[in-house]
Length: 531
Image 1: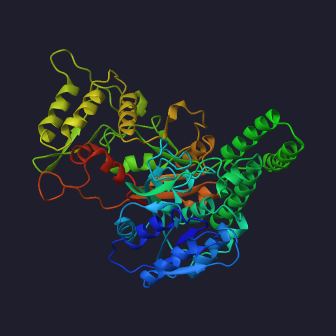
Image 2: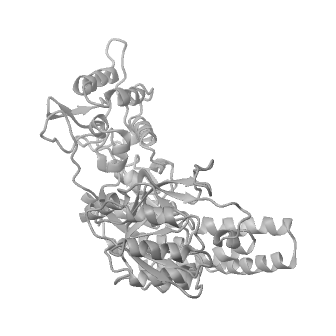
Image 3: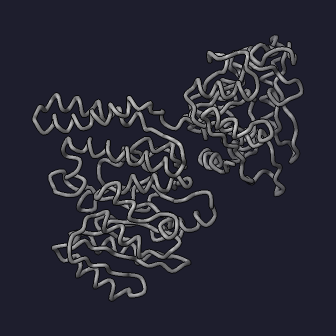
């Protein structure tokens, strides 16, 4: 669907970019013109006559506002998916719809698909500034990425499942704001699933001069925008509560609005600015006094494992805070110091050698066997990996990372593994905060489930994610009684090309890195479901 108002200079470029999409399915383009005073309606009717099977013109006689215009079009949309655009923007890839359609057909756990865009000047030339600050860096966007203002991508790039056919009343958008819908829509979608942003530029967003009157400038070029944002945030938090039945407060965003408005009010004292600040201050005070909860805080806890399987890294990537559980007993014969790798198309076991391992000791009390000049166990391990993977496509890239890990001068098992976890997380651009359990002040008398919940609460957690194997250990009702949501992460079936045609599953992250590009592995990190 296409929203337009006085876009005579740009509307042909926009319409052309949409009607020339190459797809394996039929689509319609509903064009809502909000009573333009220029020749925009004429151009729309011209394209409707030229492409009668695609273009559906909706020419309003009276200007009703951007969100009301959108709501009207959403009520008309009967398709399974909806794509959006505005009359001054345009698409740059004629395969855009097809690629996003295929992704959503394949990935049922995602509610929407976006992609990268380019920004252009009014004349269509590339703009100097390409980065948009309110677009989340996370390519697999979820509600925790919203943070009060961050979006999964630019609206011109979004294709989403049509939740407005049966799940959501389009009129709800007007309850939030009559001129702002992008944030509301992002939240409506993200309470239902993840949103993927593809690493491919397939549309252009046109920047206009700051002195030109448009909707964005009229809202955000004055201090009243802080009150608008604060009130909108309150409505969005209430909406999330009605959908998820839990209170989530985007505390950082609230404080940022309050403090920035306070500073700007002091610099620009006037009756209007003071009145605006008073309104925000009253709302902020009510929120502070009301015993608000913090933002969504997802915690994961796992023992330190050396080069563990891909699912371990999915868990780290899925949470806000990951706890390395180093102050529990070492399990002799377990997988803390060993894993599996590929050698001659078969799974073999590698391990790091310890000198005082015992099930009666905590993990952080175990020491590694050090070399004596003649024998270096870490060098031998590197040579084992080199022999197995030197012909792998990404050996050269990964071998440097591997050498850095194995050459790390640390005799404590837990600290050595912690170092490897941090290095690989950095390599995969995982920005999760990593915390060591022994550094957390906690109730040492608690065990098992109670200890896990205690750690979560001390870290400000609202949700705990555990590997799927813990379903028999942890009870969702017990976590709920303690104010925590509990989910179990289950890795999708992931197959990639190894040396032979027969895939060997269940190997170390090392195998994944050797046969896949870093970007591909980052995509693998998102291939899971929560139960």
